[in-house]
Length: 180
Image (cartoon, rainbow, N blue to C red):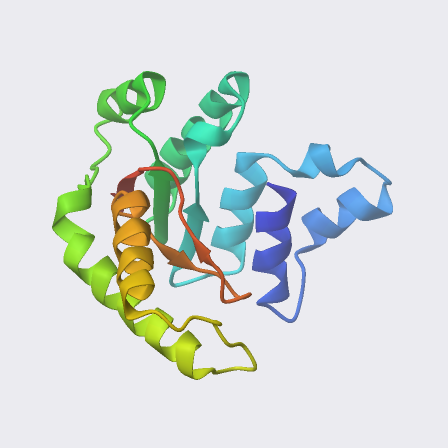
């Protein structure tokens, strides 16, 4: 929560006095790091839109998930400007919590994006074979290239993310929820 509050503050020239008071009074960051503070700050700083992305909610410790789900629910109720995007595997407690709060969800199935992933992986492997951005895939066999593309496409299970290090990363099969 502190990281979200810090990001909001960085987008404005001034920090509201009530928030500075936490620092001047030497209060712990956990005192200010509450959803109420986040909501008040977004309102006080008059943001037209606030985007929050929470990836891999299912990977958070089970005893902490309800705090995050509560945060999502409360922020959506209180801030009309909030757009929240959450990814998660279909885990019963998460599915139940969002269903109970009538939060809209979008399910992505692997078969719906397999062709896009295959095309992306194929193009990336071709580029790497030729060498780009100082990287080169030492591969001489077209058969092996086809096998690499097929394996990466199948193992992606519908999700493939390109990280800033240009490594292909396969997150676990996720349900994607878009809220707001």
